[in-house]
Amino acid sequence: MKVLLRNPRREVEFDGPRSVDRLLDELQLSREAHLVICNGTLVPGDAVLGDDDQIEVRPVISGGAA
Amino acid sequence: MTAVGSKCRVCKAPAVIDLPRHNAKFCAEHLQQLCRRQMAKAIEDFDMLSLDDRILVAVSGGKDSLAVWDMLIEAGYQADGLYIGLGIGEYSTDSGGYVQRFADERGLHLQTIDLRDEYGYDVPTAARATGRVPCSACGLSKRRLFDQAALDGGYDVVVTGHNLDDEAAVLFGNTLRWDIDYLARQMPVLPAANGFPKKAKPLIRLTEREMAAWCLVRGIDYVVEECPIAAGNRHLSYKESLNAVEAKSPGAKASFYLGFLDRMAPLLAGQSAAAAGDLNECERCGSPTTGDVCAFCRLVEKSSAHEPVPVEMVMTRGRRR
Image (cartoon, rainbow over all chains, first blue to last red; front, side):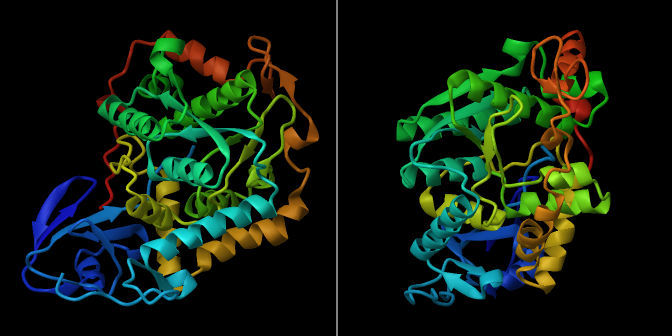
């Protein structure tokens, strides 16, 4: 599956189905600080992502100290 | 997707998000219901807003400010937007575009102020000219201009999109330094006083993740990219630290911040310089200040006289994944 990452924007590929939580663990990304979007739809941690899916891992932490 | 995840706690439809701090998963509709209820509770608990108020929303193009503007309008409040062009290269150009499209698509009134055009400087230049970190120069400029626009425009209250993560991170920093003055001022609503307009933060019971999810399920486009000159700042490192705690103890951030408001803030009431009334009028602009000339006037003087500094000159190297 193709996975779009942000900050900086880049794409990585994974082979084989896996859950959202496992994907985030493999990417060493915090679940509290990211959302996962599968084919344009927000999905929870136990959703299983397939090889043909278009995935975006979107960071949610933002902002300065203002 | 080869398999759908678990079900919404309320209606058993497929869930779109799991929220460990609520020990629950929600579909798009019931996620929105949760967000609406949390904002309504914050507004009611702290007497933030009334439906008769004219509200000025400080909008940046990010998820939180667009979400709070959307939520207020949906709830029937009268809310206009104010966007400040900070001059942070393409990031500012893109951010302004998201805000303008949001307002245009909904027929909302948006006011725009461009720092370079109207005050002769931008945030990268101000950071270099004053020796402040960029977020400090940015925050000082925004606070002052939002205050001024609210007073000039006859608005009853300025609303910002500060969320639970923002407030918990600021509280964490203030507590590490035991900064009593800042702790005493870290309230979700500040009444109009001493020449400052009333300010309110209706999203204090909602996390960044919940606000990003609100935007996704509502179809709100926002700037996802991080500010190129905020990366690596101390505030962001506090958020990461608190999220590490939250991962082990869901609800810890809410307990930390909302517990502070409930049990510590009352003990600190009246401890800040502003609350004590120890303020003068700036001898140049008349705004409230603790000195003779306010920090904003000093920043404008130094920054507008400085050669423009490209954003690349103040970009930090620290990058998060």
